[in-house]
Image 1 (cartoon, rainbow, N blue to C red):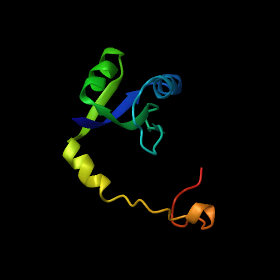
Image 2: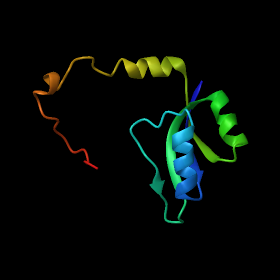
Image 3: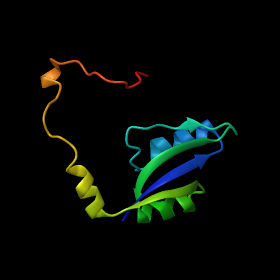
Image 4: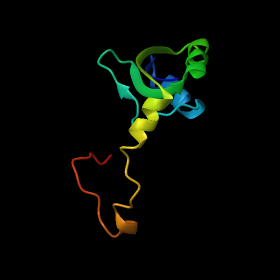
Length: 98
């Protein structure tokens, strides 16, 4: 089973270390600084990796339990066509360029 978790660190340095060293899927997101000064990132991790994070001293909250069948269902929602036609069509939408 896969878990969607929120991992919290006290400092930017700790978060950078986590992002660089951990084999976790952060999807398209990145860390966010919270009003209390901590940093939080959402990640998708297998059950056994959750225990690794805990043993390394990272704090986390489980947001969602995701089964393989649910992942396969969600994958069916993703198109397989090249909507940018090999770079000839510019992306459009309300995304934020960073």
